[in-house]
Image (cartoon, rainbow, N blue to C red; front, top):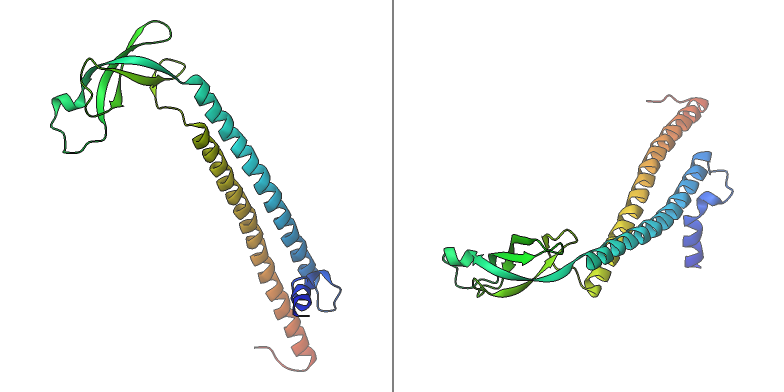
Length: 192
């Protein structure tokens, strides 16, 4: 019984009632439309964002590849290192896809010395780049970006609906004040 009563309270704007005004019905339609738009918009935005992120990550995985490089100098050679260092910077030399020798700076293990061979990642233009994300990392990133965009879209739609409801509440309060003023005059009183 209590559940039916709560549902009836929530749906009072949809029932015929002498106390229901047009603005109440407008608000009910706005709430319904906002929830439908928020749900559909969030699902669509999340799916599109996730798919776009997945395509970008797949493109990165196909465009990036490994090449062998020779360490020329390391940053650790010229400066005093702290006791524990996880990486150091080094100047490396490698041959690009086009056959031209290239030079760049990259992070290496702290014990890497000049003349050591290391593996570096390059992009389609032959520039040094980071290692592409693994399949698991790319799936996680695509899913996370889709979820965040979906949540943002839903919140934006519901926030706009809330602003509209605030405007409707102000209008409703003005209408109530005018109705009470008319009733007070009819009963012979004076309004303050």
